[in-house]
Structures are given as C-alpha cells and as structure tokens.
Amino acid sequence: MLILALATAAALQTVPPGESPVDPYVESNANAHAEPFTGTAMLMAFHGRAGIDRIADDLVDRNLRDKRIKEIFDKQDIVRLRRVLKLQFCYILNGGCDYSGRTMKDAHRDLGIQTADMGALVENLQAAMRAEKVPFFAQNRFLAKLAPMKRDILQEHKGRRRTPTE
Ligand code: HEM
Image (tube, rainbow, N blue to C red; front, side):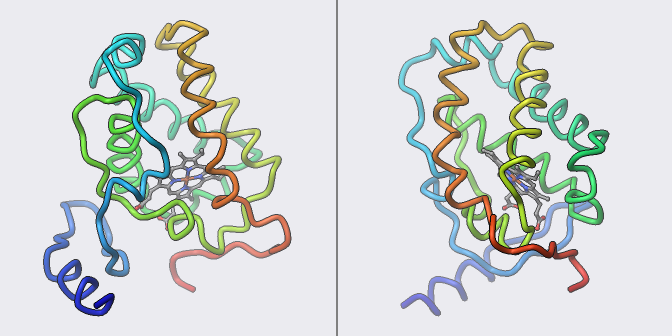
C-alpha cells in the first residue's frame, strides 16, 4: 500500500521551475505538523497571504546571512524552501493553503540541527515578524504552534550535517 502511495506520489510530483527533485513522498496537510488556527484573527495579524510571504522570505534571507546557521542552508534548495515554507505558514495561519511539503522529520533528516541552531532560527523569525509589525500576542501564538516541531527537527546526538551531494 505504501509502495503504491509512493508510486502515485512520484508520478504526480512535478518539479517546479528552479527547483531540484526530492525523493517521492505522500503529500498531506498532516506533514505540516500543526493544527491550523481557526477564524481569521491570526491571518489578519500576519497581514494576509502577502504578509506571510514577506515574513517567510525575510526569515530565509536572515538565515542565509546568519553566521550561526547559514552553513546549514548552504547548497540546499532555497527556491523550494521559500515556496514550501510559505505554504506551511499559510496553512497553519488558516490562509486557505494546503501544505504540499515533506514532514518535518524528513525535511530535516541528517542536517544535524542542534538546540542552539533552533534558537537562532526562532530569533530570526521573531525579527521577521517584528519587521512586518505582527502584534506581539500573535507572534507568541504562532511560535507556540511551531514549538512542538523541535522534537522532529533536532538531532542533538548526531554531529555531522548532510549536503545534497551526499
Ligand atoms: C519550527 C521550526 C522550523 C520549521 C517550521 C521549518 C520548516 C521547514 C520546511 C517547511 C522545509 C521544507 C520542506 C520540504 O522541502 O518539503 C524545511 C526545510 C529545511 N529546513 Fe527547516 N524548519 C524549521 C527549523 C529549521 C532549523 C532550526 C533549521 C536550521 C537552522 C532548518 C533548516 C532547514 C533546511 C536546511 C531545509 C532544507 C532541507 C532540504 O532541502 O533538504 N529548519 N524547513
């Protein structure tokens, strides 16, 4: 059954322009690892889809400039990361998107992400939300939704990080 699902997924997954192919996986909103907010308050606090896109792009830009973690993003598919991160944020904030990316565990497998790396990324996300003037209460509600994902993202006991050529 899983093989059939993966074969179907592989057949359906086209690679958008500018992106590299990834191993086949089954698309599901469950891969986003968070129940979306209900209602429109959070979406409005983030200034709609346009605000979400600005925040996700700003977050990626800050990560790529951040001496503490930029090496982890080196040689990864940043075009795909931007696209899929926007969908994940939009899905969680009830912005009318479906999440089509991988699970958090699969996306971060073997990257060797440590607690300090997560701290750096959260600081960058806070800065991106501040720059978009997202109210403080909404920033905190969003961060609380993301917090449980760290179980699937962190690999405290694995030292080495993969690059796409490995
Ligand atoms: C709650 C925190 C985080 C969220 C919500 C998140 C979300 C995502 C998403 C949606 C993807 C793309 C999945 C896909 O391609 O299908 C991704 C990939 C990636 N993330 Fe994260 N992430 C988080 C934390 C981190 C941290 C702390 C780092 C490193 C400091 C990191 C580094 C990466 C890298 C390098 C990729 C690309 C991997 C690849 O293309 O193979 N992420 N993340």
